[in-house]
Length: 245
Image (cartoon, rainbow, N blue to C red; front, side):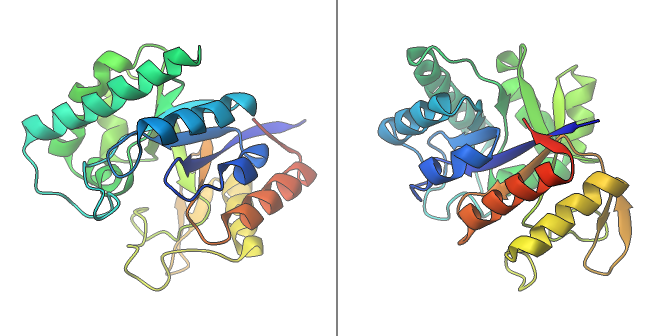
C-alpha cells in the first residue's frame, strides 16, 4: 500500500529557485509582504505554483524585512493584526487573479515560533486569521500551543515537521543561532524524515525520541542546497513507498 506525504517549501523569498524546487514538492508557502514579497514576486510565484499544480499557501510574517522575519518583533497587537490581515488580503486578491484558491496558511520564522510556544500570541494569531479559514488548513507543529488554540476554534490543521532542522527534547526547533540547527546533508535529511514516517518519533539533539505526528514536511527554500535535498527526498521517499502529494 502506498502512503502519501506532502512536501512543502517556503518560496517567493527572493532566492529565485522556485522553478527548480517545484517539480519535487506538493505544496508551497509564498511570502506575502511581511518578511519578503512584492506584488511582482507574489504573482510570479503563484504563476509557477499553479503551473506545477501545487497546493498554495500564504506565508505571513512579522512586518520585518530587515531581519527576514526571523527575530521576535516588538510590535503592538493592533499593528500586528493589521499587518497580517493586509498580507493575507493582498495574497488572496492575487490568488483570485490567477483563479486559484488558498489551500493553507503557515506563519513564518519568529512568528511561527512565537505562536507555537506562547498562548497570548497564538490567540492573537487565530483571532486574526480566523475569517480566512473556511476550507483552509493551518500548518502547525505537533503538540504546540497554536495547535491547541486552533482546534478550540474548530480550524482545520495539518501537522508540520521540518526535514532540514534539528529538534530539541521538547520538540521545539533548535535555534538558528546554534551550529547544529540545520541539517544540510541530503542523506541525513532523508533518514531524519524516513525515521519520523516509519516510527512516528523524531530523534532529538540528545538522541532521545519524541512522539510526533506529521502531515507535511518542510524543506526551507533558502537552504543552500535545498534543490539537491528535495530531489533526493522526492526520489527516495517514492522508493520507500511514499507518494508525494
